[in-house]
Image 1: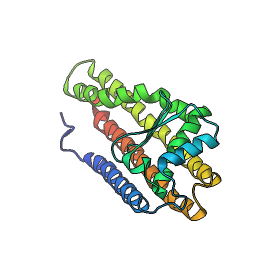
Image 2 (image 1 turned 60 degrees about the vertical axis):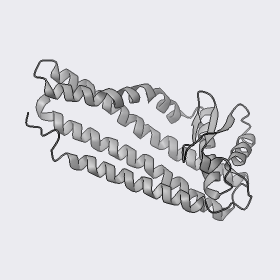
Image 3 (image 1 turned 90 degrees about the vertical axis):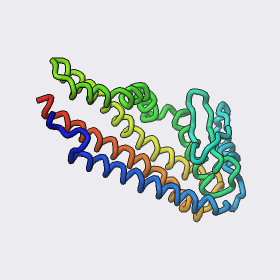
Image 4 (image 1 turned 180 degrees about the horizontal axis):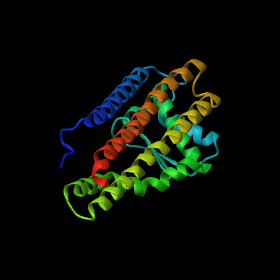
Length: 233
């Protein structure tokens, strides 16, 4: 076939993406671990911080729940629920307050119909479809020798591009949520100026995981284009 699908130079792109992801994940975990041991001066937990932020913003229709796991915190817009993980829910640390505030930042985005959040939500079905079907379609297109092979390859690349677009739209959503978190936590008196700086470190490290994921997806897309260029030509 001439592409060396399983042993080809384009694997360097995969390795670069994997390396970026591992570095970002390691930095995020170490930064969170560091500041999860720093007790906030207010002594409030992540759950209490989230409740105060929502109250200060006049948001009364969002629940706060505990979810098992580590760093599994998220906001579910379908049920209007902020779910805080083991390391956040009952933890009175600077890191816990920062993560809780970040999730409340997503609540504020939803409450105010923040455009990039709406775009990301709209892209979820296409992104899921692309993640699951893109590679199978492309591999089948590369393996078969028929008039439909080019069509399968093009559909696969289009689907994968949707997943990449989802990753890119995620970036402004996450950075904006962190910005909102730092602002509201400071205004509400949940963190003093020094703690705001420490929380910023945590949120920046978390944001880098999304940057690494987006970079990895772009590299994967580039690899797909390189692998399929000759066949489509």
